[in-house]
Each structure stands twice: as C-alpha cells, then as structure tokens.
Image (cartoon, rainbow, N blue to C red; front, top):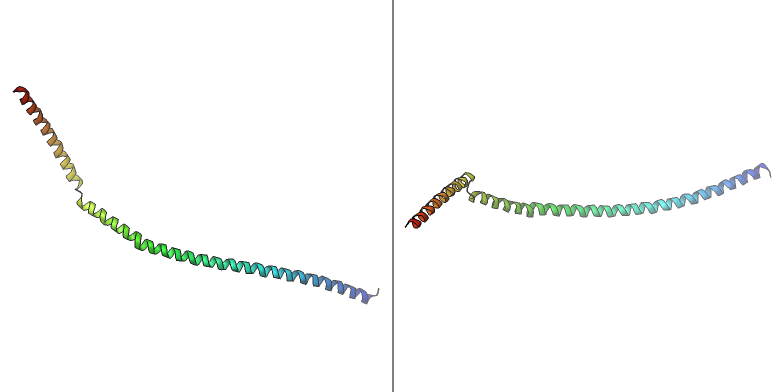
Length: 120
C-alpha cells in the first residue's frame, strides 16, 4: 500500500469518525431541544401559577381591607360602648363599701328585732 492509499484510508476513517460524531451531535441537539421545550413548558406553568397566586393575594387583601377591617371597627365600637356604660372602678369600690356597711346595719337591726321579739 503506497502513501496515497494510506492517506486516503486514513481520510476515510477520519470521515467515518466525523460522520459518527455528527450523528452523536445531532442526537444531542435533539435531546437538548426536547429538554429546553420541556423547561419552557414548565416555566409557562409556573408563570400561570404565579399569576394565579397574585390574583389570590389580591383577593385576600381586598377581603382583609373590607371585611375584617369592618368587623374590627364594629368590635371597637362595641368596646367603646361598654367602656362608656361601665361604672368607673372607684365608683364600684365606693358602692361595694356602702353595701358592706348597709349589710352590717341590717344584721345589727335584725339582731335587735330578734332580741325585742324574744324579750316581749
């Protein structure tokens, strides 16, 4: 085999290897395209999920702003009404003291009435 034939044989072998590498590269490109398409699809789904979450958060915010705030205001108004109608603590303390005194006087009078009833 002369040099030209050896060179041609080497070139054919190199061409065969290059063709094999090209086939592998084409397969890898197809796999990458498939994977990228899958990632893009997943990202579209995530974008939709994020959009839905934003909508849900907006609805919750509206609910909090309107419904819960309204209920808290009603509760605060009721609390204020209670505070306005309740007697002050010092007044309650004074009344408790007066009631205690009246109980003592009533007991004393009841004892005297009983004593008079027993004497007569």
